[in-house]
Every structure is written in C-alpha cells, then in structure tokens.
Length: 163
Image 1 (tube, rainbow, N blue to C red):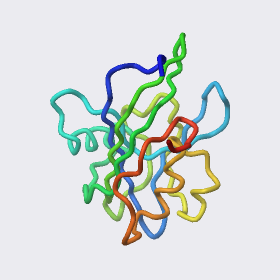
Image 2: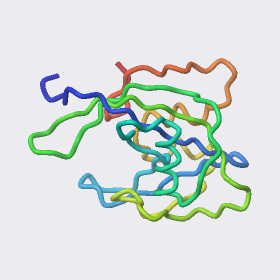
Image 3: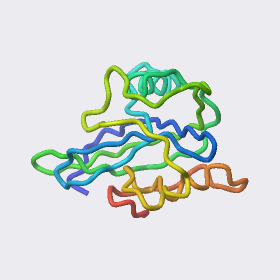
Image 4: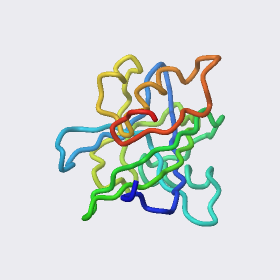
C-alpha cells in the first residue's frame, strides 16, 4: 500500500429517501466515461462537526438544508485519486439518514461537485442498476431501513470490493 496517502479524511453522506426514492447527484465527465451517481455530501473541514459538514455540502450540492437523522452506517473507503503518480486516500465515510422539505424540487446548489450535472430522485429498486460512487452504496442503500443492518460496513476499495 505504498500509494496510500498517510492522512485519513472524514466524509459525510446524506441518504435522503422519500416515497421509496433516493435523492442522488448525477455526474458525468470522468476520464473512464459514463454517468455516475452519488449521495450528497463531502469532506469534513478542520474544526467542523460532521453535521455542519453535511449541511454545508447539501447547500452547495442540492441547494437546501436537510434534517439530519440517525447515523446509519460507517465505512472505510480507499479512494483512487486522479493524480500522477496514482495515489489512494483512506476516507472514513459517515452515512446519515436525512430528509428534505416536502416541497423540495431537485436542483444543483451554488457550488456543485466538479462533475455534477443534475440532482434526481431515483427509485430504490433501480439502485443496483446504477454506477454508484462509491459502489459499496449499491448494497447499503436498499437496506437502510432493515432492522438488523450493521452500522460498520467494513473496508472497501474504489472498485466496491470489501476487504
């Protein structure tokens, strides 16, 4: 693992579910091609609480404040970075169950992600058919309300595989 950057980065993600649909960022323009989907969220800044990070990221990406509910999952993620030479970053991801106002209409925020094209509601049953980033979310999202789900998901690599 000599390509691993030594600092661990914390990140948060908002799982927003309404009428069995998940709010996702639609992204394009990657060097590997194709459309990817992601949950709203991003990296924690120094001195910022995870909930503050989540609110800031949701305003930037989906143009709304969220009501933050339970922390439902934590995962270690080894993220491949587009750098030369190629490196990976260890990211601790915290997934919170969130909600938005009933009248919220999906839209990009004032500072969307670099590859973000749109914000969409996607039926939960279609999650397995999508190219998600990170890919481990394809297993996690449909089970968000399972009574016996594990909170710690384990260590995942950029390809979605678990150690």
